[in-house]
Image 1 (cartoon, rainbow, N blue to C red):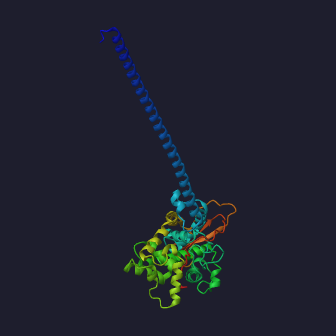
Image 2: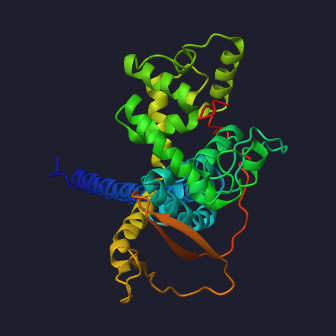
Image 3: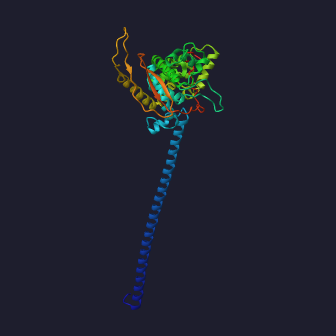
Length: 396
């Protein structure tokens, strides 16, 4: 047909049109492909931007949460007894700042001197004072309305009966005149004396360490605190029951041997006053024992500092004794060694406190310690634990 000029022209025109149509279709497909790639690329970039924005937002939120947690921990550490030790753990400092750190810096000298005189581990004494009162010599369990929960007071939170018994038994050792025959009212006059407070806590702790090892488990911290918190009768009931049957409830352990409604009511008061340790009384003896060890170990930073200070006292003792100048012999009396205390820089406008220190052998020596004046401290208004020595020596 192409031999016919007219037909050939028509065929060539049709072929040319088909070719151009194919080329146009190919170009359109290529353009569509490029557009699709461009759209997909922009979508991926937008997705990355959104993801980055979400990540940055999450980081900001996380940072705020962390800052809030830190602030909350610091508040608990400075203002509540339950939170004692949180600041020390967070900051990793040997002596923490804030209210509890200031109180520790003041109480340290009294607790060290008393521990040395009583012959007891200063670290254990520091742990008890940390949890019981936050080193507040004026601490007392008081409700928000001002009502006193009990007569507990000071570094060790001794109630009146135990305080009076301890003063009469050990007070003379710490300069208490008339110790041995003081009434409750007379003993109360020494309640705010930090030297006497520290001394009674150290002596009580030494006695309780010995009893705790005799009746308790392998955790010295938990053993000594059981006797501090519960007193002899209840502590022995709890610890001996736990050794026989760790799953026994605190209530059942403490009720052993009770014969009167009055005694059963007293046990219920002990449980309700120490809910963080004993819950509603259904907590097992083993769990309560574990909690006692945990609350004691919140004061590890203070304990380490106290032990370091106690070791320094022991190290200084032999170096400070020097022979006296030659003196004529009079009868059979010889001159004793003289204790020469190293000179220390005096702080202006600060009262001097003479804190007697003694070795276990009973040799007397004194060291003058200068401390800065401080505020009276704070009441334990927010404590949910009425840390009361319910038994002690007097059993009151």
